[in-house]
Length: 349
Image 1 (cartoon, helix red, strand yellow):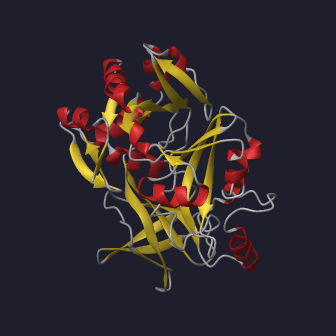
Image 2: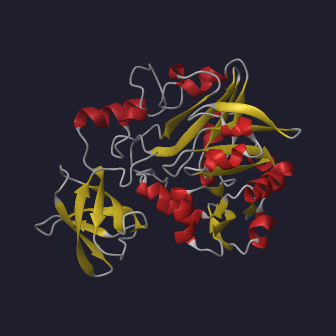
């Protein structure tokens, strides 16, 4: 089991700890997931996301190595910017991982894979796993930048999807205008020896600590996929509705031929968003049925939406469906209606 550099800080705040991707991480704190969710939507919350990997790719050939493997086109951005991209399985185009690339400077990229996928990403792209050397804190919400500006105005000024190396006191950190909540904010990669000092400064500035529970309800409301649910083995970028992350103009990337074949042959299933009345969520794996009772798919993620006051879910299913169509979902033996809707469920800010 791995532990965040902030583990002692979480326990001192009374966090409920859970295992996630081989790490012990805070699920929630004393105030609970609902309060943490609302803090992020209404003011500012911070999340320890140190369980995410950091693979550092450096050198004169770093750009070409990443460009030849990942789906998106790094040529669309420049040093000092971030990009969302996918790493595909070469045989069936499954999404091995969805990744944020931080282009820190000309010949250095910090590639940020999901918790359990770091070794596979290193095998695919090379580089060095530097996850153990730092913590990553995401500060999110409409008041996030205002809070950070009280003690670190340079970090607060990093714009959306920009990346900058900045001094926190005498410590060099990497700050990116990225996040996973649908709110404005920044993510800070801080050397582990300075992580507690930064966490405490954010607490002093009025930022509310939030755990993985709130992070999940926030990302679902924002219509953001989670690897192992909306992405993963057997699920391609096209099925997940994320073709915009695929740069077909590139001559090659891993899994390109298999993904192109799927595009030409047509998709057997697609990801849709549904709304469900009431507070009883449809959990992962719940069966989805057509009006005639035929089994057409399953729920990949579902939860109660604190912002909307009812439940939402992602469903992966066959057939062509449009907004307003109704399907049935089997929630532990009880059939409920789900209505196909636009995603994101809650508008991103």
